[in-house]
Length: 161
Image: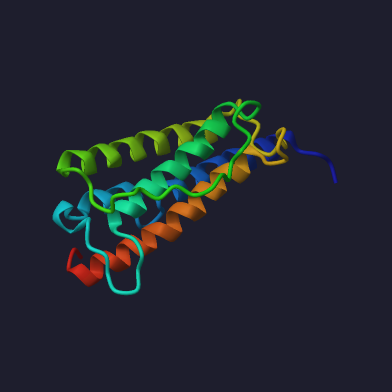
């Protein structure tokens, strides 16, 4: 079986496209769901859940930023899984703070997607910490999906959707 460079390039392009699509949220676009969530319900903490939607957004935003820094500069930002960040206050200061956090989350997510889609990004090569850019992108995807699922469930309980 001969090595087919064109097929390899096509497969890599498809991998980049699929990963970018999933980072956006696939059938449940992450940023759209966040923007649909009513600000006046972001501080509710349901029985049995130790966090509000605001806490979840800030936690997601922080984790995504840590991994984005690694993706941008893996030699100097190699601690990809420090202790998790949870905000002290489960309530956003105001509606502007909620919207600003979503904007920041979206901007960082778009940067992650741009890195993934860039043909010059070596997705699979291990970095100083043994992780790859691909690993970081999938970690973001999984982490966001997990917490967006929680936000969606909270929103359903609160009548957002």
